Image (cartoon, rainbow, N blue to C red; front, side, top):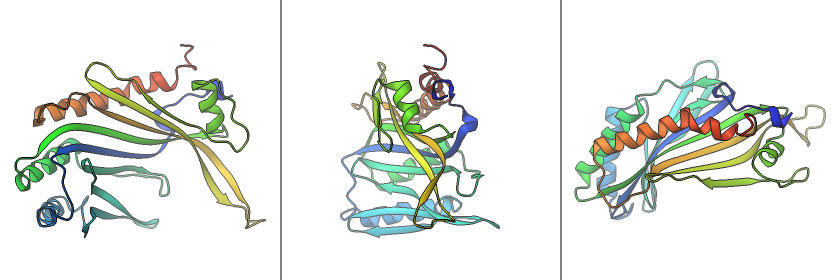
Length: 250
């Protein structure tokens, strides 16, 4: 059964998109707090449907957004973070808990606009790498994700209740194409035995990080758009060739 499973876009039940940018010299939350606050305020003013609340301390800087689903509930999620490498824009796309797909702004426009705001507040910083990270959870139904990953991508037998995590980089001349695979489960309480959880369905988390390899140049808007376009093309086409290689007999 696992051998015949096919990864398709219709099986995606959770999807988050991130645009990460490596910035040099690094941004330091403690030293750059005034500039970061200024950047955050401009983003909140311009894109209130994505950026809402600033969270700032000497060690971190985040922007969060509360997404409300009438009749279903609400969820508060980070939509921008400063990391040790640079800045990450976070776009939650499909949320399984509400069975909703969010209607987001154009990701390229927000990212480029946000980076322009960063450049205005941080002149002299170099944007040397841009990565598009797609974090998917594919519903595999009754098929255990661990068995699926093992049988399709390895010769390893993992025992019942075992775990497997694969991390693969399949670079070409210009881009890193990193893929991570991990089995996940959707758990619910057993109404008859509250202390025992039962598996509602199985899944596979697939994280794809597509980024430029050459970090020697300051990336302009055209180059950033080119990287994002190539990354999106890879996710739409070649990713599924890779995930379904056993299924198609290759």
